[in-house]
Amino acid sequence: MDASTIHHAVFFFDKGKIVKEMLWSEFEAVLDNVVGLPQFENQTMQSVFVKINSQLKVTACVFFLIKFGAGGQADPTWNMPLHQLSDAAGKGPDLGVGPIKLACKSQCPAAWHQQSMWDPDLNAKPSAFDAIKDAAKRNRLALVYIEADAAPTAAKAIPVVGGAAVAANVDVEALRAQIQQEERERTEGAIKAAKLQLATLANQHKEEVDALHRDYLRDMRDDHKELLALRESLAQAEAKVQKLEATTAEQAKAMEAARHEFVAQAGAAGGVSAEALKELEARLEAEFKAKLEAESRGLKEELEMKAVELTYRDEQMNTLREEVANLHQDKQRMLRDSAGNLLDKLEKSGISFVGWNPSLGHINIPLAEMGVFLDSPDAWYAKKTDVPQELYEAWMAHYSFPVCQAELEDGGMCGEPIERVDSAAKFLPGRSDCCPAHQKKAAG
Image 1 (tube, rainbow, N blue to C red):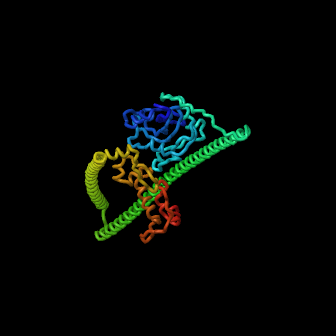
Image 2: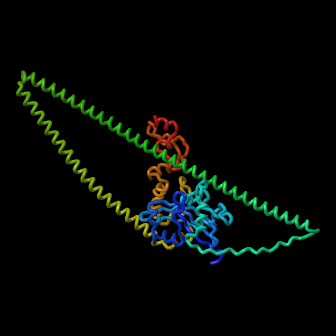
Image 3: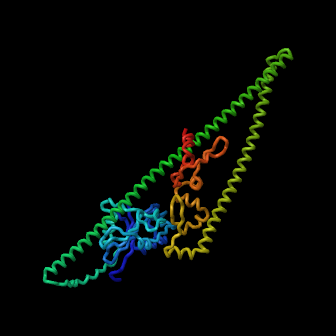
């Protein structure tokens, strides 16, 4: 080792404080699931990849997120080229040896990794940068410290023309230039820090607004589903009432016809005795019960047959699901076996697989999810957008052809051009895909 040695470490944050520090080699063991971090079980941790020089000064920071599952096992799909991101990062605050290289959500050199990063709170006291600087200075990781070589102090030759006064003037000019240079550097640093803070605050504000918007639209979608369900229940109830009214009217007509027939028979026979009436009532009641029992037996047999059919169908569906799952596994295995070595080499060399979606923009596709993505890109994008696949597909149809989907009385479609919704999370079926007139009609 020499004075130019750079150490690599990873710090884990929780509520603005560093809760764990480890060397890069230890973090690699965590990524390979050789060891787990049980204290982070089922959590998404705010982490920082840090470069520290041999004088224990921080030179680069990459603020990233990583998920841990059961037992504190790292997410196997996690894949971020931290070294490459730190090399391509922009300038950050000065932590002792000039501006560090900084990559975070508001200043990400690769847009497709932005969703896997986070922004430090610059208004916190102490800030994340203060915590990182102090942790590097404490050196709990036992990094090797090497004293920097002292710069040789060679006296500058100052031309003396005409005596000491000229030399003094030259010294003043050199000092003034040095002060001006230092002032420019401080001003540039302050401007960059202010820009970073503004970008961070703007990003935080956008995330808060987006979260509120998502919650609002989720409530709206739930209310819309509930309204549709109530309307459907009302329509079914009205149909049932109409059916009952029709059945009652038919029964009333049948009773009236039976009464007329009975009266006519009684008139022809010259009157009917009470015993004959009772006998007739008993006969009618027996016929009604027999008919009812026959219909009940038929319905019961039909229901039993339907139950058997449903059971058989469920068994078939379960078998088909198992076959589909096995096919997916085989496809994933074939992908890994056939091209796995090459893809692994590409991934380890820092090459990322990136997709693009109008709702998400550029997004990184982990190698472990490549088979799922190739099998159904829409399902994969819907999961990443955090919306149901049906909603995502409806939004894609709207995004591709933004016209009113409301159905007209003649069975056609309105087709009026409407404003395109740029995100699946903001899309509300029945409203976002309708013109203002049909939105108002649906609301009424």
